[in-house]
Length: 369
Ligand code: HEM
Image: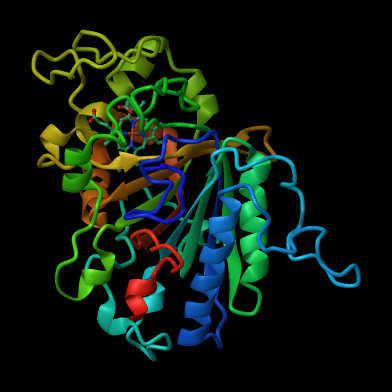
């Protein structure tokens, strides 16, 4: 199967080999929007997305094929760039399923797993980067193609939903294909070594694809996305001696190998004391989390700098899992992470990711049938 195809059993952008750039956007439904608005929005978004991921404009008349007396359907800045591996992944936030008022008539179909995340030790969440009724993850190898997608989908949402917050990311911090070299995050460490890969069907079924039990039948083949905007205090980190940096992560900065020995892909050993009990890789490892794993798909970000001349930089963490409980368990375990001193979670969100659209249909159709 084509890993970039919009239609399919699963949405693209999860197991797809991680592209180089991200534009992530969170939307809120307008106060007066009702079920029909939500359905038509998801239909229009899916229609436009299916075109854009093949390198086409959002509509047939597109950027320059319409009447010259009207604003063009497509804003036009992606003309000539091609698809550059664009994937567009849509998610549904917990707020859509609010029983209070139930304005979309879907409260009875809320997956039990879909609820706002609990507060974690050290959280410093800013409302400006938190929550949202809908999300769009646009990934592409050309940043302008990802930005074009979000910009045009926002335009299409006019009157039904509005942009709440968005995030640009660069330099993937993960890999989902064995052919991809492990990239590095802004601490300079290889990130994504122990990730779930896109061709590991067994691990994907066990840890990433949601089942369809009971009223959640519409979620079968879907997943749950957790986003965390994690600020990294890189000036503090940069003053740390190399051996301390290695101890904090539990791996060697150069090779990415676990401090217990072997090469990058050797299984870490937590006996013998080579890896600190509170090293990041130990606390995040399946052996201390009841076997739980997640598929990470984050990006680096730099949003300029603050008034004190420090970079406003970090990791826009994205993880896919069968249920948000997997992320919650690991994040709780990370409470004593040595890395906590150098990071602060400033934004957060959780969305149900419906399965892929059938040919000619739209993402989320199962929820309304
Ligand atoms: C592993 C960095 C946040 C979960 C790693 C590794 C690095 C790293 C360098 C080792 C290489 C690898 O296997 O990918 C970071 C940084 C973070 C961050 C810089 C924040 C700025 C998180 C968060 C979670 C998480 C919030 C989940 C709650 C994991 C997991 C592994 C891992 C599951 C693999 C552990 C294993 O199986 O060996 N991370 N991480 N990380 N991280 Fe993080």
